[in-house]
Image (cartoon, rainbow, N blue to C red; front, side, top):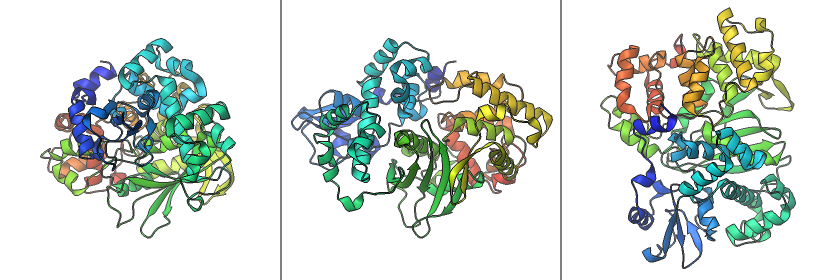
Length: 523
């Protein structure tokens, strides 16, 4: 069964099939933030487009036109509202669960593939012709890949103009524009301002002059967010030298820090959790990035969004899981639980194999040893961060004796790394999840748990269940349900299409920390 068919079979309905323009207008009239990023409202009388929750006076229905993407509104000649900043809303939650061509294309465009490889490169990755891709995207989103990438560049340009003191010329190329003229024209069209005028809207005291590409920004999210769960999850698995969790800049805040291997260089990312007094619906996480090349800004932001699952729709997830007799109590106790992804699918794949049949702590230690021996050292350490995690290509040629694990697992690791390095197996956001799963299962030593874990985190699949996982078993037993794999799988059928979130609910609600298990929880 293809991914797109499987997604529909699991109950994922396209949003455009359940809402019409009357519903959209009611959402605008009530300023319903749940629809931010799902559609955009263009007002013909003013020539601007807004997010549904814009605080401005509600326009007349006759003056409203609705678009499925900011790029479509821009292509129709509308400029972004300077009050609600519709270009900065979280991405549509559809791209979290959709696994068809459009969903896969949007994930790759978000990662900057069009800027780096062009439309032909995007189409090649997806296995379609450029013409087919253009037709599909235009039919669903009202804009083709070039327009969608252009909207992404415009938003990056605004972010840099208003948060840094970088020269305008540097910003133009950092945002991905081919020329300063193209940059100027796009900013005028999208924001009805010159770059200097857009910069002047923000007081200079609010912009940072941090050297070497450093900047501060906000990562927007919708609904509630349980940042403690995210930070706890990442802290438990943090690889020494590559990741760390440290006290944050505000009392009670914890900060997740890690190194990033990026297309044009490397970076260091810091993301703050919420403070004890912050509402779960605050709407953003504070983030700081130090990049060796500012062209990597959009890609690094997108990868952090995937890591923290910031484009999810927690209302939809919690409504379904919260109504379940088994999980309802857990959902009500901790609203907004997310399903963490990862910034580097190859790194996660290596760590998943390292963690087979051992504890989280043991897997973390083993990953740290590999990073020390085969990782790339940063030119200058930053706190506890000193290394980039080794690439699959490097590990494929490493001495197997350096892998302190049984021989069968060593062979599995080197085989996986070779397959990733050679492109036999792909784990980027544009792959067909079903095909990737089949390719992984064909490799020696890669079993269903590892494949499921990679689908859940590396491929951001929201509907994966791990019936044999020891943490899942403990979570079910704590709820008074049978914990054997067959019973667990049967119970999980009611949780589709959000079974990945159910897994995290069970892990978080387990009486014993899942890290104390001896199998299948260690990646």
